[in-house]
Length: 437
Image 1 (spheres, helix red, strand yellow):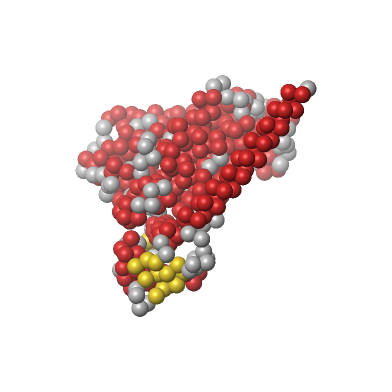
Image 2: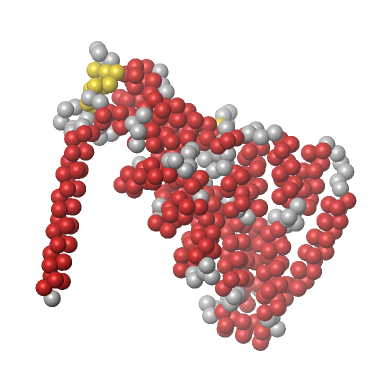
């Protein structure tokens, strides 16, 4: 299943600290050799200040208590730099620890800067030092301290680019601390800025949207309402266009959200058209499953793809989250996905056929006969399908009062013809009006 691992596509669009959770997942899933994952971790850590962590991994990888001299020297540099930055930011840090003094800060940043300078001799130099100190703390892996200082920095910063950079850092820190509600708030702030900001180049704005969508995966698949939130974001015109042109692999996550979200059926129809458009340029078991069911009506193909989808979910860092119980563990999204995938197959198959053999249907649902019968009985009771089970013949019978798929197609076509005629008439009337002026 390594061919379906999107980590190489996703990682370049993340802060390197956000890549660590993905590598941890891949290491646990045994998708790659353990040695390969450990080497990737060390390579990532070489560009951060998490030297102690890098040393521990080096010892584990090479089964030794010794570490290279360059790591020892690098650690000394980090400690010295941290101390220097701490001293430079100390006046502002001390001020921020004074609750009564902080209460005097206002929404007016210029007032705050003047007040800090007049009363506490804190100026732009100390504010810049706070940013550098917060950034260094983040690189050391102190995400809590970094998040606090970046929040305070943004309250004082008057440089829009610096403030935006601090917001990205704050979002990353909240994600890494798994503060999902706070991270979602920061994500929305960032989206508002990206959508309204005048970028030097449209490509810069597109790249920012790409980063935002990749970072959002951590939040949406760890949030109870995330399956709705990802559709709200990714399905907006500007964002779905960005996905189609620059990041088609994100269709996997939008497709998954649509499959497990029963409340977005109207948007789902338009999404199927996008799946059809992108089918030749991007293929993934989850998007191919939807194409089999709703574009090609290939139920044998859908059955095969459903098995592949299950493996994809189990080996995807965002979709394969495990919930540990007393004596077992489960992947809730996998179970929910399979249940809804069977429902999609059943609904579509039933709308094409009047009478369905239970044995055939059980095979297409990847269930044995008894399981399929129980599943279908439960589904018919709880759904709007006009169907019943004929136990003697072992079939599911669709009630005749529901128009079949071909009749529905004819009705939709009639409506389309009427709207087209009305539109043409309006255009002709407008043209005639212009001609008489």
